[in-house]
Length: 289
Image 1 (cartoon, rainbow, N blue to C red):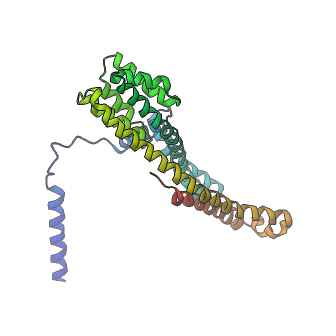
Image 2: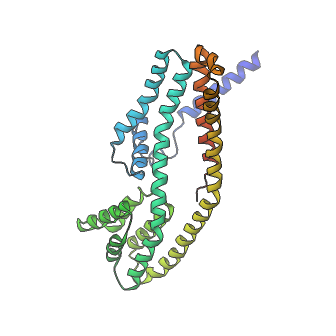
Image 3: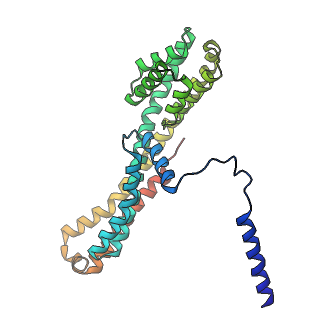
């Protein structure tokens, strides 16, 4: 007993010392905002990457309020399973929706990256400045969001903002890695005052790297397309079999339809497991490069 008391007292003293010890970098560390402010900042970055003109604070509050409201609605209906499924859906659907938009934007920008770097390289090789190369790229860009980014960079420069600063701002909203690589190299060259003639060699290497990355991505996407089709085929088997049996003989589901357990527990759990299986299958099959 005395040994146990001594161990507990030593642990308490140790925890007290750790809790009251000053941090090593407290003076240099910037003050952190509240949990809500950090959540709003994360959602602002994701909304910008998804190209959604939505107020980040309202969107964050909506995402935080939706799951409890759906749980409450499920409890009002008298089914804890519906409440759990509704709360899970309210938590996951906004995240999945933003992820889908970001992936779609990434595919579009990745397709534009080789053309953008080739236009910039050709402009620099012809003796143009960085600004003139960006203006030329703006005129030849096929993606609307990329044109808007280039318009923003050029307009900010005419308002007195340095090119590298506006490029860094645009870079923060870029979803594609190849396009982000182009913005990073542009910002570094401009910030370090590297002449356009000397930067031409860097962009030659960058163009070959971007082209190689795009080819690898296309090959991986082609190899995984069959696996994605197989996932959808397997996902359609269970609901198809359910509809087939219901049309063939609806009396097979009398117990399921007539009981509270069937309506409010078994059916929601089946739908939840079906959706969960599809989501996890695509998560495992997705390859990010």
